[in-house]
Image (cartoon, rainbow, N blue to C red; front, side, top):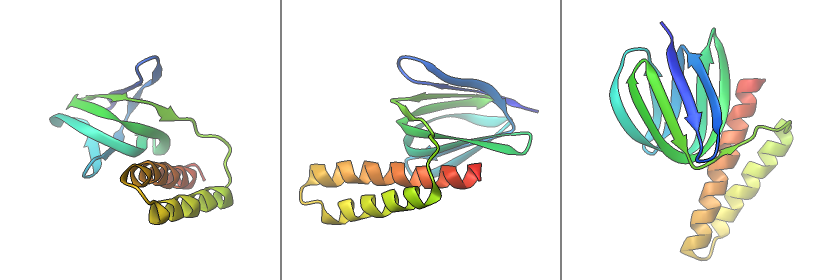
Length: 133
């Protein structure tokens, strides 16, 4: 069986499709969802949402939010998504290294928090490239 999945931001519908499997970036780790999943509401971290349909994965970079799961329906409400552009593996690796250094060199709590969000996005970009390759 297939599940219905919708990804929404405050101002638009990112996608509305079916899926065989969904992997969400939860705050405490990845949350895998298959058809018939128990009802669940969970907070999402910045990271990579993966949607599997017919043995093909589609990655979407999320910027925090919530997910509601109810048997064969997944609704993802997020603050924003990052569009996947034609980024090269070497460029994504450089961005990841730069973000890692920014976290290590942050001098204030706010700078460290901002840098850690950028690190999560850079990690998600690199993971997305691997799924698209």
